[in-house]
Length: 112
Length: 114
Image (cartoon, rainbow over all chains, first blue to last red; front, side):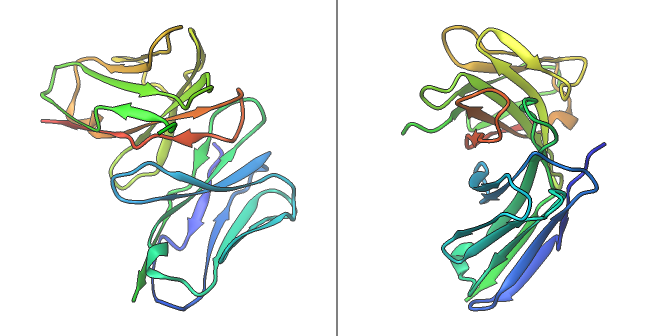
């Protein structure tokens, strides 16, 4: 069974701090996605990484895909209360299956 | 709003009743995926459908659950004889092409079985 392990599970920080969320697996993935989910809503796609070693930036968010395509990280610089939410990593185990495997999520709370 | 639509947003059923969850994909998308999010658990894949075809149902419980995506109209996830353990949030996602990672999610249907 292919699993995605996210850490930490919970994170509570003050506005302005930096943080990193990790998504690890023993399996190789053809692509990996990061989603953000707010209470009562569906996940919203933030980014997709495909190439080993790839780095993508979305304003204050930096996403990295590991060289071996087994892990990824999400770094937020100068966190704001609006960043509060559940962050999920998801991966497609092999191309053309359509199935996404999700990590259990990291709940982030940014206090003003 | 051209996003993925799901209805109802909230559904309450008594044990033994049937639940029907509907999903209209994004405009132009012909691939639909259903996921279930149990309390305190992550999202779990259930089924992947293309118009009139089930592509992958490896995540569907063997009994009481079925899904369809007809040529016309929304995709339907049907749960017969619901039990308390079926209480969860059910999410639908759609994609433009098959087998792609670019899946866009709807707001979900929260099913409560009393």
